[in-house]
Image (cartoon, rainbow, N blue to C red):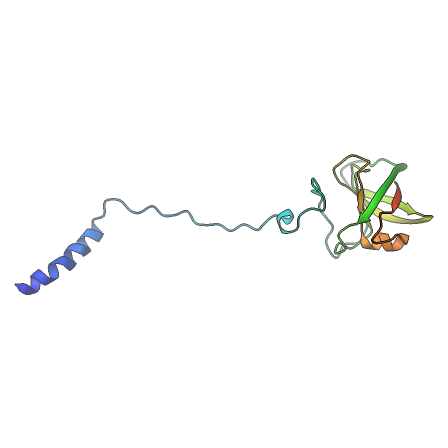
Length: 149
């Protein structure tokens, strides 16, 4: 009889676990999502949501989103953009549609992909390392570029 009395608490505990009236709420699984590009590397300037070309792509291709303005677009002060982005490009508020154009600095001209960024036309631009080198512009300065299509 004493054997049964000693086993009684264990049996009651086992029955209590089996007779739970409500199941514990399962926590929602945590889903890990990749961080957006702008969370990994902040944009160069607020409002700069421009997608960049892949590392292997250094070509200048016109945009399929519509006709681009042609002729002289104006003068912009440029700084060196992200040196890790290859190609000849100029991110500028002087254009509204991405496409090919010509950038001139002190008599030197180069064909470049013109990429729109938000902001007034009087705000500055960012140039690729290859464009700055092709034009002979100072990498640490703020050269004035004439931009045209």
